[in-house]
Image (cartoon, rainbow, N blue to C red; front, side, top):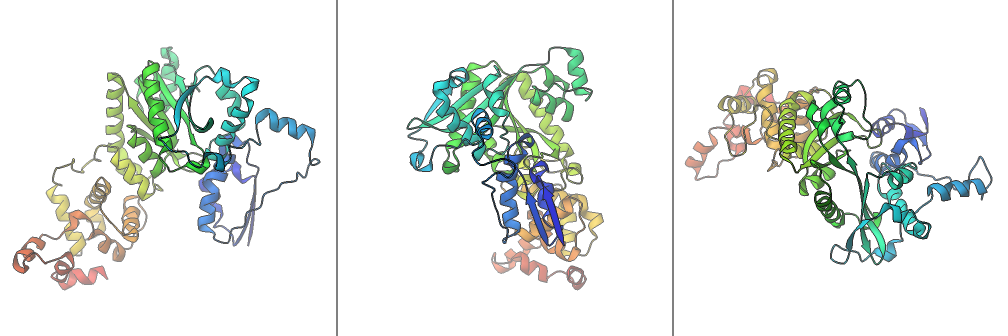
Length: 453
């Protein structure tokens, strides 16, 4: 009847959402700072999902502390030292900001550390706290003190309204260390891209490359979805490519359809999708590259071919909860999966025969499954086929190995491009081009129709 969850931000976002359905009445409490970034992940990623799933959700915030007095000087000192209560500039002061009237700037992190820039630093960190799900208190010292960090900002009327923070990741020079990282025997913590592409994706040569990793992309909460983030990201990438001798600009982020499309629009290409989910976002972590050397481009093409080949099997296991929109973006950035035709090519004749005979006949799913999977994956690639949500979900259940009702699956398959019945063209000839898939269905033998009911 009742479920109480304390410090809910310490749990992965997908676990928090799942727990919401475990009892009729659920109480979740949490602090938001700390938990390696999961605090802001709870506020920016989990809470919106909880509100969608529970319309009657009530949200309370504790303003007066319970363990110490209001106005405690130690609390004030801690907040001031770590900017725990920092806020971005007011919405009214930047409401008119646009790409046309904003300026791009490379920011010197050492200058930003000076005491006379404290107000500006507070605005920037406040924007990170309110606008990026991975922000944690330790970010302040990491981003200011680490010499490998690069800061890029977007300004409007003197106020920072957008921020990109990138880190230069050096190659792992020691071959023994690189081999150990590749074999998952040790970690090289600063080299996140090298680890993802070697330890996870399986390409040892990634450890010898120099990357510029975009760690944070953040736009003022009141100015999002205006194109400012895309413009800032493009300018930042161009500056990194100009000023740094790197093999590639890269990023790792929680894979949502919006972020994957954003990176694809600025030239980023998917190289890897993690099998597990990030605790701070509840999503699989995507690794994208913008290669600028021949060896980096060669690595990217091999990684994409490998991921594409493995994708149908991964969808049955570690990616079995991937949403249709994320899958569509994933397919848009990869070569066609195994068995799917390349762009402009015709599908395999036997695959089409299996799809059509299942859709308009009474064949079993097990006999046609491989063709049905390829038909759906091809339909999700650009230009993405128009499917209603119910049919799309039924087909996704099939691809991801969940139990599917044939009475729902067969009508869903009929809506795939490969399922157009072969006698449609004949019907058009007889009826002056007016025959439709529905008319073709009426010409199927009665046994096929009964099997669909």
